[in-house]
View 1 (cartoon, rainbow, N blue to C red):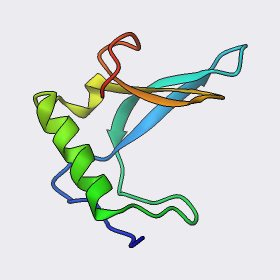
View 2 (cartoon, one colour):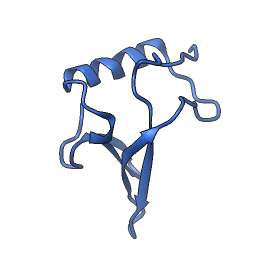
View 3 (cartoon, rainbow, N blue to C red):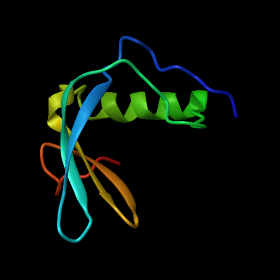
Amino acid sequence: MTRVEPDPALPVEVVALRVQDDGTARGRCVGPSPFMPLRSQQVSARGVEEAEERWEAAGKPEPTRLGVTVTSDGQRIWLDSPTNAMP
């Protein structure tokens, strides 16, 4: 897999997470940040394209409308509310 930098025109945001007593972390995008892959993270070109397609399909929402919930089962990206998961 090849490491690919996302299109700089796409928003990349800082997420502020709050960890709950059960270990679930939930938060919302709060500000811009340069793209920085995690250690050993590999992002395929197709993965970047799929993310852009999902963002476009959602109507290109402002990044501050996006949030994430992280549990021991994985992570879920949502729009406006944790109950509105993005595909």
